[in-house]
Image 1 (cartoon, helix red, strand yellow):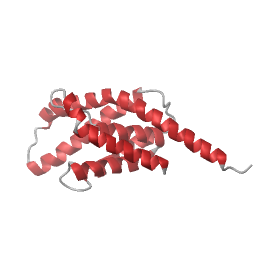
Image 2: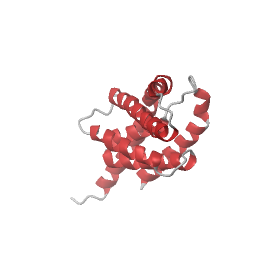
Image 3: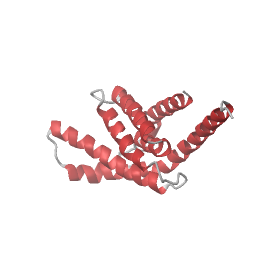
Image 4: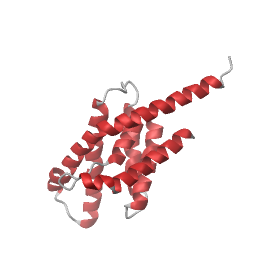
Length: 174
């Protein structure tokens, strides 16, 4: 229960910060996609199942507040959590290279999918222009911001895991 409440608070804070404060940190009209960073981080730290739940929750919040249809971003979030969660095992959590790399790749794929589905309906198919001017800078910016966000989520996860270990030890029968 504590994990769910903590995750919900993190996602609400992210939603508020991404829609207000991060607008002032635009670089060439691009802001980092912090929702993808949270989904990737939680998938790496907690596994596929919690990555999917985090992706769904982050996506459904984006759908409700920013989307034109319900479930569009939620589907992308679930798929991101599912795919990135496969890297959870055999991973040294204190190493920042994998989260940064996966945030870069996940943002590029996520934004490409958003563009291609939008282009399919709008008929605007200049993908390379969009890739060079929007997707690539946003992926780099998201990867750089992943260093800070991953460290924060790593600390939060350590506290949650410490609390879970204490509860299991408290009620275990010897």
